[in-house]
Amino acid sequence: MADNKNTCPDAVCIDAGRVYDSCADKDCHEDLRVYFSEHDQQKLGGAAVARVRKAELLTTCIDVEALPFNRGFYACDLTFYFEITAEACDGRGQQPYTVCGVASCTKKVILYGSEGNVKVFSSEFTDNAFDRQEMPSRSLPRCVVQVAEPVVLDARLVNACDCGCGCTLTCDSLPETLRCRFGADLTCGGDRVLVVTLGLFSIVQMVRNVQMLVPVYDFCMPSKECTPSGDSPCDAFRHMGFPVDEFFPPKQSECDGGCGCRTDGGCGCG
Image 1 (spheres, one colour):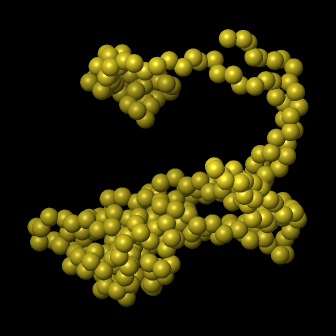
Image 2: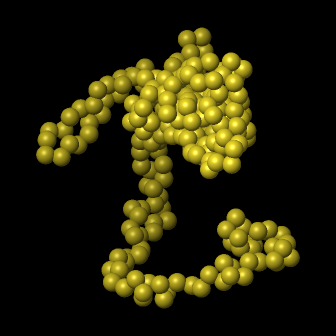
Image 3: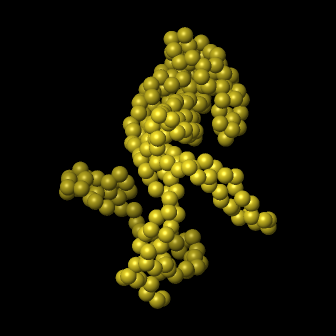
């Protein structure tokens, strides 16, 4: 295969997303009410204690609006939706039962996204049809949110009149993509409600597509040849290394060489 490395780069104009502003946050969202279906809420009403087994971020709704008093800055309103899986016990020696509900919280950040006063048009190819032109969009920057899985910090059952969280979520207020996930309507009733405290790590970026001049050395020609995978499953298994660390975990003294233990159970810098 020919060598495709060129020591003299060419200047090429590309259209790419540039991050104009960003922020990283570590937020603690306290006492979020978890909403359940009528069936699960009735089961929860007779529980003495509940433990959250899993909290999963399902989706984030993002709304971006320009600030009229500060040109180039934008307000990003974020709404996070979580699926909460909990186990409830009635305290009489019965088997714990699992309930699944949804909780939400909001966050607002203000970031710089520069200015643009043009309308943006684009076309997308449609197979077996004419290319259709996308509707024009305002020249707003895009808000990109990266979120790690939430950390459950606390969960407890409280009386509905003591939680102070009110009823802020219904099935109709859920995003369209989540309505089918929970099936039945969420209820705001019940004498006992589950509240959770979640820790959330997030990065919010304001991205705008711009044309940039970048140096390009050459096209990226793959250096690896495509080989057929004709080995049988047993042949592929024979080529695997023996997992020594699974049978003989490293001692603490073996992990004190300066780099510490890896998260996969091994030692050193990896």
